[in-house]
Length: 144
Ligand SMILES: [Fe+2]
Image 1 (tube, rainbow, N blue to C red):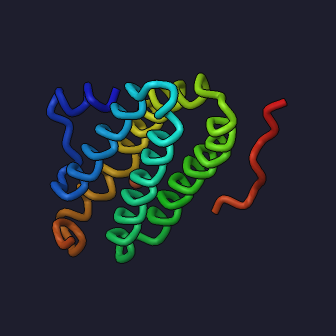
Image 2: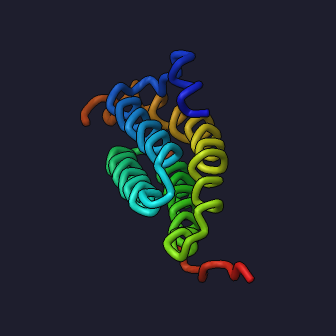
């Protein structure tokens, strides 16, 4: 899904962010294509890349509208929480869950998040100072 967005010329309006998002698309592609013995590592790499991208975005939005930034950070935290919860299951051998996340759920979430949060924030900010200068507290849900 993310690859389709890029092949259709998707852009947030901020080249530094497009590069980060493109890196996530590559991580998703690597995880999706990883053979079973390598999938756990690929999922771990995907999580690390996503955390890095979210951290970069959050640093850039430090001077933006605090209400929008808070909502944006909450979305990042919620999806990372879910991905970390699933990570344990993936490491325990639930590759089906991991592959479903890498091929369907996360690309769908990212597409929605980028369209509704990243693009509006960083397009708006491209007119201001942060353009090109470049908690989750609940427990993991039970799966039984
Ligand atoms: Fe974001």
